[in-house]
Length: 184
Image 1 (cartoon, helix red, strand yellow):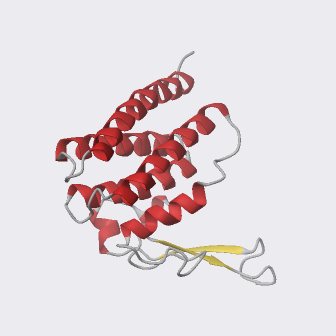
Image 2 (cartoon, one colour):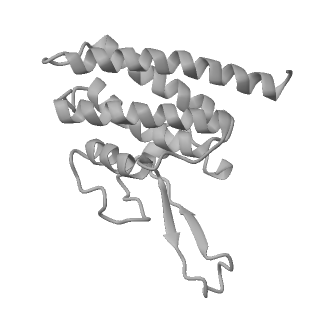
């Protein structure tokens, strides 16, 4: 195995190590009744961030999207804006399972986890401080971590024969993180 196949295999090997570290860290975070050890939170965050980055390099969009929202919730924990309460930790443990399943699907094929969208909504609600995740299905808010608006255009629209249009309206945070709209 050489070239891209070798890199891909290495990525999935690294994912297994990262998922193992994540699982241990999340277990430690769940076991504490007080605020979780910040180094453990950082370690779990870095594991999700590394999986997201590698998945992005291989174009694994579902894995990237899920990891991104998971990472956002962990970042709020790192900054002290979100506590490691029991309900939050249960959501993070389920998110860990889905992330692990998404890695397996990306590596071996198969269907995405059935509970992925519901869990994305839970994570998104945590990231928004408990806001209703179903506020506007199919369209992200301008405060969302996703700087893209996805608009469902009727099939009869003359501008978009395939029925969908994607409009990019980046905000300052989009550029501050080094994203390049032309690349999208």
